[in-house]
Image 1 (cartoon, each protein chain N blue to C red):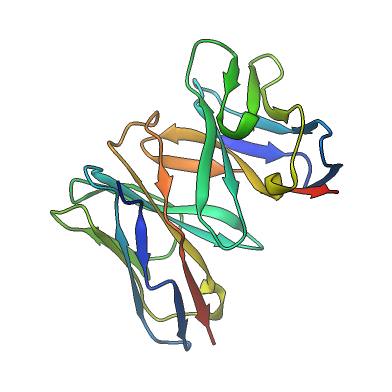
Image 2 (image 1 turned 180 degrees about the vertical axis):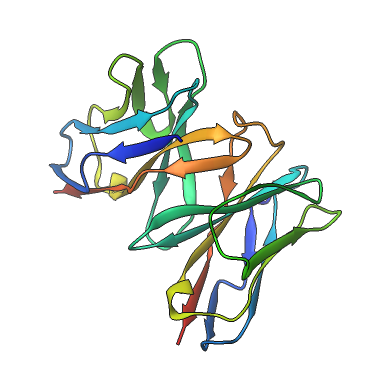
Length: 112
Length: 114
């Protein structure tokens, strides 16, 4: 079965600093990987996804992620965060059909 | 295009009652998936419907059921509510039932069971 581990439950960072949110997955088959963001009292919004091809994936709002097959990781990065990036971020894998298996989430707290 | 809409947004029920939640997908989308989000268990997949057929089912008891109509709108029903069913229920729609398809989420229905 496919699973996702998000290594940090909370990440505090100062505004304009870089950030990395870590995600590791386990899978015995080819993986499709996703990062979603959830703002308070809202649903989830797709930031980016990896299906195949280039291992560096660029998404919305200046985020990017790198797929590393040997490390089974899909870490999310942003070079300079803003207060508005404060939210919860979820890494997910798609084992089949439209089922998504999510990690536990990482709360990003951007401080001024 | 309008996004995914879910009704109602908030719901309070008591133990033993049943509840029906509704989801209207983005126009043209034929797949609807449901997820339960709780602080303890996180985001868990309930089921997926595509062209009125259940395609995938998560590991939930039979009290949780769903259906999809010919216009792709979907409903989920929870019977004999338990306190542990209190959660945010999220619906997501996508064009098809391919694992590469992007799922677009609605704002959710927050269910509180007293």
